[in-house]
Length: 181
Image 1 (cartoon, helix red, strand yellow):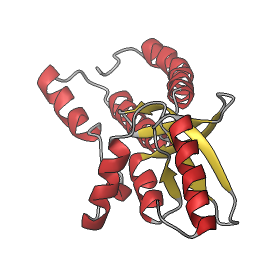
Image 2 (cartoon, rainbow, N blue to C red):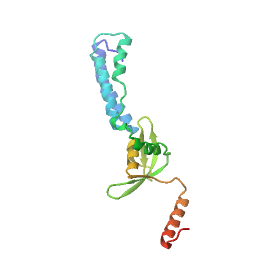
Image 3 (cartoon, rainbow, N blue to C red):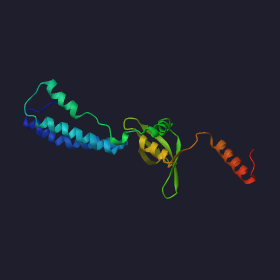
Image 4 (cartoon, rainbow, N blue to C red):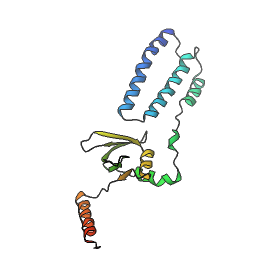
């Protein structure tokens, strides 16, 4: 970013900046980037642009870029602190494969299943879809780890459905007959 020398250039940029910021926001929302991070980044961009627009005289390239680099430094959200007892759950979430089915246990004792459609590493976002392929959930890895720790999330086995069904039938038979096979 360089300070703009003429009033004409400033007027042009003043008209373009809101459009560009809107396009950036829409693009990041489209890829399900973290809403908190979107707002944070847009605020940082606006602050950087304000610094440049306020500057009326040309400065040396090194002096101009040094403050902007500090201003645009990315910060880590507060909730990314991982407690020692959450590390194992974070590891389980990180090891989930695309296509992994999970089951969420809601507070009203209802449950719903969905499949991991994608993991956006940039924002550590996990997107889940239902059986029809429609997006139903967007959560961070830490949020998922905390859900897993609280037993509000279960990872469904990736073994073939026939094997799971047979195992369920055998367990049911053992329970009804009262003997262990």
